[in-house]
Length: 343
Image (cartoon, rainbow, N blue to C red; front, side, top):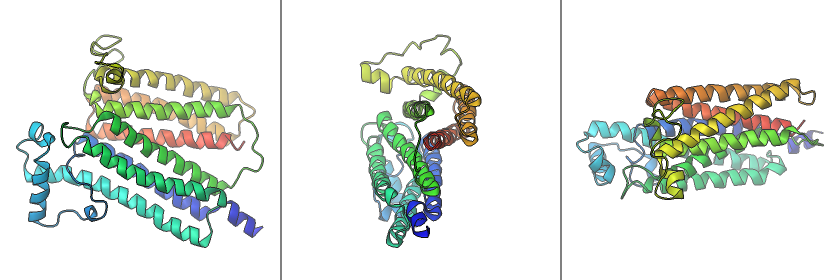
């Protein structure tokens, strides 16, 4: 029995994965602050190893500042910035990158240890390798995103920000799901559940909303149309259409904000509908009902927070809180989707 349990589940492995998920959550929050403070382009080179050491002398700081003064963001947005002001944005980006390195180390080192001790359930080993690979890809995508703002733009390309944030949230969900699998063990005889489709729909809509939110952030669309429920007094903003279909979907500030609003309304309807149906269900377990109720509550809180953030002109603390709540919401929806598959 001991051997079977060792192969099927592992509390230490689950705790390790939950810790990594918490660090990814922290990185999402710091990444949001980095974006809102305009700090993401302050480090103009990608040095995965040596970049872990920040400038330690006046000469090193002068060198980093000189590199920043060569990019369009300095010339067109921050011209005249002092070294002290540069240090303020530099530390945000450096902390974001440091957290990325920390996440990699906290994943890779225990992973190697657990592999050597054969403590990872065999059905999860390949999945953990996939998580490690995705983490590496995320680092490369982060630089791909930053590089889009170093030559011709004063900020990163919105679609690249969407890919970067989407992968971060995807990793968060995958880590939570895998941690739950490691904690609970394999479901012996999973039963078909009518709630699987509903939970998958809810999780998919939340993830899509995160992607739309990234486009809003990448286009700085939270700083326009700051009334609600209309947009400058209209149902459809005047500048909705871009110069092409992709220009509308990814680069029109009016369009991306409208799409984000509309999906929020749909999410509220779906989440509340699922929660109400769950209360009447004799099929769902009590913890599943609690999870879907908590998810629906989080959807409502996030929708209200989005409205307040927008109408307040997206101040730093509200923008960070809105992004943090999105991660919490995705985590709850992931746990609900995982739970209904175990019946």
